[in-house]
Image 1 (cartoon, rainbow over the protein chains, first blue to last red):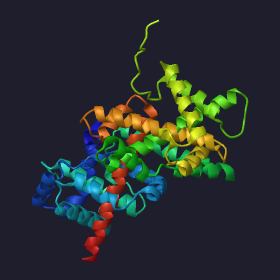
Image 2: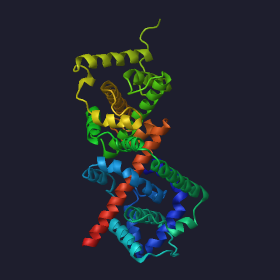
Image 3: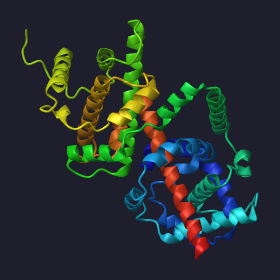
Image 4: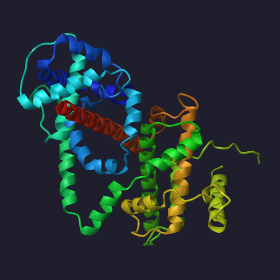
Length: 272
Length: 125
């Protein structure tokens, strides 16, 4: 899975990961590094967090409401077992310990060259950053900014700007707009019901990630229909709550655009 | 072909309104509360019509059913995996971006939680 999303971006981030990880490795010897190399190669999330750990974490704070409201804690175990079967407990403790050391000692730069284990440093860097950002205020690695490629910089700047603009916008909302915005962010489909529905259809169990993805897509789907229906209602010059006729017209339009899966298009049975 | 689907869907709808039992959409409403909040969030009135909510719920269930069926045919047959879903929405930029965001955030949260728990463990021991 890590190939699908993160490989495209991992090319940019290798340098940053290396430099950042170098800071935290002063307590490690080669042996533990080799353990990590063995243990974490197949981990799902080993290369996930290279891109923008800071910015995405600041963002995740605001989205966390939606997650915490819906997520069951015990479901984590199922998923962890799926993905962590290659990692040893030692690697986690090493990483956590190095993160703790980093915080306590607060070292800034460290220039020890490490030859063969660059991929592990990525792991360290991202776990350190993750640890930093989730527990304390986001503090960027100084070495991060030093070596940043222009592309990364502009993307991070763009995200920063967008977040600032959102903050300004939300702070100027009226009461009613705030209410609606809160509903927009917090509403979600119940994961249990979606999981049950999908398991009834497939006949076999579905993983947690699948349920998360499907609920998210279903919400976007509802949003598209409602927006189109509001357009239809406006075009017809009506107001008030949406009526089924608006929804049906919206569905018809979206179906023509191909945004609504209409099953296997049945071949016309009779030729006229 | 398209009209056939539409009339079928309308027929199903009318049946639900009248009979309330015999069609697949006659089952208990799964998402009534959440759908109401969602519709309000997306721009509808604060109290959406019940018929609208019902129609949307049927649509969502049909959507999920279709996606699941398609996902079962793609990749590993008979199973639904995340990659299949991502593959199915690759053309729709909005949905694709949303799935990507959700999965990335989920991973970050899990890592953060794990790191936090382990520091607590290291601290306590």
